[in-house]
Amino acid sequence: MTTINQMPDNAKLWVYQSNRAFTNEEASEITKAGLAFIADWAAHGASLNAGFEVIYNRFIVLAVDEQQALASGCSIDKSVKFIKDIELQFNLNLFDRMQVAYRKGNEIEVCKLSAFEKLAEQGMVNETTIVFNNMVTTKLAFENEWEVPLKQSWHKIVISH
Image (cartoon, rainbow, N blue to C red):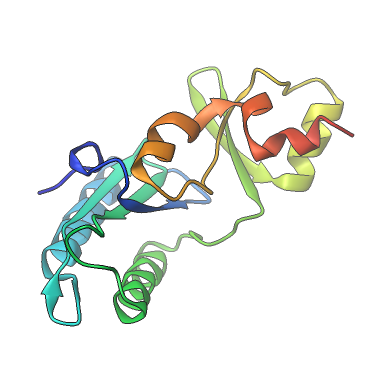
């Protein structure tokens, strides 16, 4: 089993955010399915050194070390199909990039970008609100730029109006 923190800094990475929190049982089932997927994941017959984790019962993170073997179009398509299968199995939405996840105290809230803008206008979120930047594409960026204050993320557009 390879976790994300065991991957090299330059590993290619994808973050899938759920529209709702997973139950602990769902998180466990998704993790088992993900670990089975990465164990068999290959590109042109070459095994991929990959990592998979469910984080905060809300995010699915998949990474691949492209130093060992490049993730080909076909292998990336297989990963997208796997994520779509998880969506169907658990009745989730993992591809809505117009949803924003942010911290409200110890909780993680998710809302549409338009609703997030309204929260900013009302002062309910501000430049220090922790947001999740799911646009990160490497493990190093994930570690440093994923869970950050709004002012350090692309989300800052909602407070610059």
